[in-house]
Image (cartoon, rainbow, N blue to C red; front, side):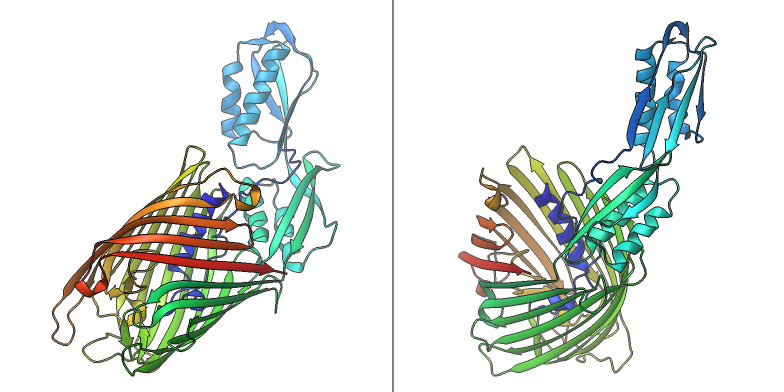
Length: 535
């Protein structure tokens, strides 16, 4: 299930990625990663959760139940409704136990996180049954090994909830676990007061991650192969923040070099995040004596409207800028200064055997801060809409089906970094990365993977097959008429994953439909290797 959950992260981050995490020649002007959008683990309720305690004492089979009353707290309507079918039935211990279980089941579907249902020893001669209800709350919080200020702030949010709702419990425990490099073990122990619990929180922290990777994919116009190195630093400046450094280069260290820096920091203790990013790219074309460079700078804010174990909904807004001087962005040379205002929304729904993820963004180019485009080729003021969706589903115990789709629409002539690029590891795997890009278009892929029985270290390894396709439209420019392009490919491969340290991908992909003759018409073999170190 963790593999399915990871799909939610992939799709939610795709529309809202930090420029510091995108590989050239695609410098994307997107938002920072979404907090809480990465449910790549099975989230669980705290251990020893005393939420469904049911106690029944006594009973009288010779008396029919004529009325049921609730004490302790006012019963929610759904709980009262669950008790009504028991009117007129014998007040035996078996019936009272069934009544208590029905009330507990109704509570389990309510918004209350912790509850107790008790039917004490009582006089049943009149047929009246008294049910004692208690709704839980956090009586005390303990930190056996200490905790940082932000974790304590999230925990205090739980203390303030009376009664403790399921929404609050899942939200603030999830926000703790969303903190970069943090793993949190939580236990709920019975407190001294009726309905009270003691919350025990034990965090474990990692303060840095380093990774290195290499692959043989061809960057369109920039040669073959890519080196990638990343460093992630957690709580470097403030508790709960995350700093990412990304370095990318062609294998020859000449055709392109990229450095990206991103930083996220929490604002308050309810999930609001502020993100800053900057990057630089220089490119040298393989077949032409053209060199170029580009700079980006961006600011975003994001907030999880819903953060739970099953559903997540995050919104974000940002402002970013690109200054490019003949850099190769996507499949086109760009000498543009673009200023963009963005808004995005991401959603994920995690079921027992499936994950649905979707993301949508709207971008608008602004005529500010010396914004300009190449006359007749790029419109610096523009509007575009972009969406992505993914669905993963377990098929039996060993197969996983995956569906991906993306689309973009604009009526304007977009700069290279704003266009929809096709070709590469997502759509068009048999083609060079970013072999084409358009102002509007759609793309999709289907994949079926089989996971053999392996040891724990290799449990995420799989053999897979796929088919993908895309269509883009390039609007009229400088007298060149509007043109449509199509491409499609199919193939398969092996993903060998040694958790959590390394992965190796071997893939063969064959062209089904080529966008134009020079784009290729045969097989392509892709190899990628990645290793990760943690401290």
